[in-house]
Amino acid sequence: MRIIQLTVDLTGAPRRLAHVVADLPVRPNTTASFTTPLWFCATHMPSGPVGRIAGLFFTTDNGHTVLRWRRDATRTHIYHVDIPSGVTTVRASFDAILKSQLTRRMVMASWEAFMLHPAYSRVSNIPIQATIRISGNWDYATSLVTETEEAAPDGAYKTIIFKPVSAERLEDSPVLVGQYSSQSNITKDGKHQLCVAFSEPQLLNIPQDRLNKFERLIGEATALLGPGPYQQYKFLSVSSDILVPGELRGSGGGIEHAESCHLITSSRVFADLDLFDWVANVFSHEYFHVWNGKYRRPAGHVPSDFTAPLDDTLLWVYEGLTQYYGLVLAARSGLSAPSTIKTKLALAIANMQCQSGRGWRSTEDTAIGVPLRVGGSSEWGSYVRGFDYYDEGVLLWLDADTLIRERSHGAQSLDDFARKFFDVAGATQPLVVPYTLNEVVSTLDETLPFDWARFFRERVQTPQAQVNTEGFERAGYKFSYTLEPIEAPVPVAQRRLAVWHSLGVRVDQDGKVVDVQRFSRADEAGLAPSQKITHVGGNKYSLDELTAAIETARDRPDGKVQLSLEGDEESWDAEVKHSSGLVYPVLKPHGKPDVLAHIFASRAARQ
Image (cartoon, rainbow, N blue to C red; front, side, top):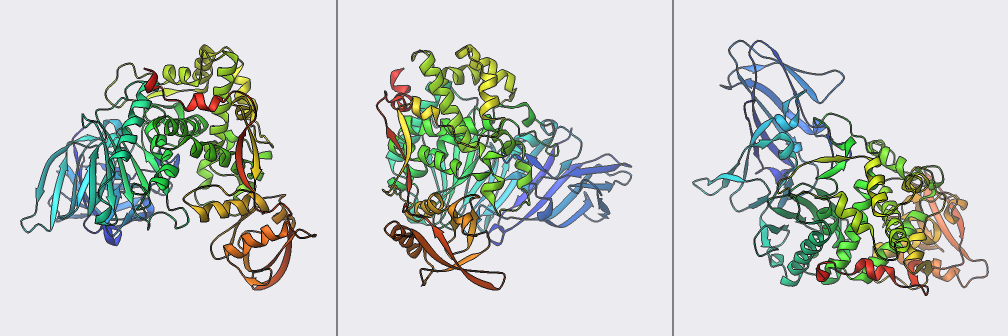
């Protein structure tokens, strides 16, 4: 197949526009069908760019003849074009409307927003040579290999041409572009890099001790799993408070790729040690995806093209196991303090307890139903349930880990399963080896003979009204609530969570009710999503007023929180009965050996 030439002009990215030109090989006297991507393994749902394409034209290669195109009536991401006699290349040009992960100073360019390629073809067999144009004073970072780089005579822009790769590989290789950019070697051989686009130039210098933590992460992952199947690996991060909700001031998450990951962080994550400690497990999570999600992935996540629906049934392995080891590796490497990880484990339990839909909907179904989130209602979110396979996965795999350790008297652990299951057999390039639930079960059985099929059937495939904390009890900890606030560098977020865990209502900064737990105190009082709390005890709503009222109710004989609400052009008062004050989740040792300390202990130091 001839190479597609794909050129993306990102100089308009600050205006949320990118101009795209694709030269597409065709056969004359045929009807050519082209498609934009639709499904992606990393997002687990249909999230393609078809609704964000404007100004689309197809022309012959001389650009003088405009060709008529028509959209497929049932597969609206596919375009049909009649090719005239003698034409072997058509040019598609359009503007891509960029929706996220960018500011006026930076953009995370994901190729799926710009790709147009032959439909009905295996993406692993479609060669594309990509070119980007960026502002002359901006820099870039990517796992793609640069073929040429040339600056305009006046320095206004520069053009970077990458070596050809398959459409599959291109989609998996985002480009970080920014005005204030930093690229730092993590390991001495330069094989691992941290590349960050900052919102301000004074943040460019990343402290060496943060880079040392990343280096230890690489060492701990290697000690656990062996060398990764890649030539190089880059942590790519857009770092701006504009991109991360104000109350979080930490991480907006990330997306995995075979030789990189792209992350969204607040501007001071790398400068503020406490903030870094709190959010750093997102880095270890995305890095673990090299083995789980990119190299090994569920068989339902190995489509032939980007239009085939994904089978998300095993996301509790793909994401749940990764979430668990993201926390474990953060502790082992020193990215985060063990106390921070314990706090996050306690929060995971509390958050899953607040999912009032857990009595009717299984963890497996929250995975299978991910596509339902596209355009779905966010109201009564905890009753419907969302991406719970992440935190449920943490609890599940800690349960499995401690069970293996207990029954083998410490001779085996989940690490032994992981090393065997994710063995790359010496591979030094990205590759994909699918897995099934049967293989997960059989490999666990090799680690410790046990009825693992039943283990997963009871905990994953069957709704569980109560959160399973057996893993914590085996690890020497009891879960409970305390009146002592959580020590975290995001106090506003933690206070909102305390309201959620105490009253069963989630409220935004303006008093709007975002979610209500069914069967909670707030539910009993008649609160519902989209209502607005206007006053607390007669005073105008603020988070301070609400938390103070909850604390005061603990000392009142009636134990009530007085609220005034409005909605649908009406207003009314409500009383929420709650006499426990603000509560915060905590894990406390309960006399058994501290197995978490063993789980968090460095493996690299023992090798």
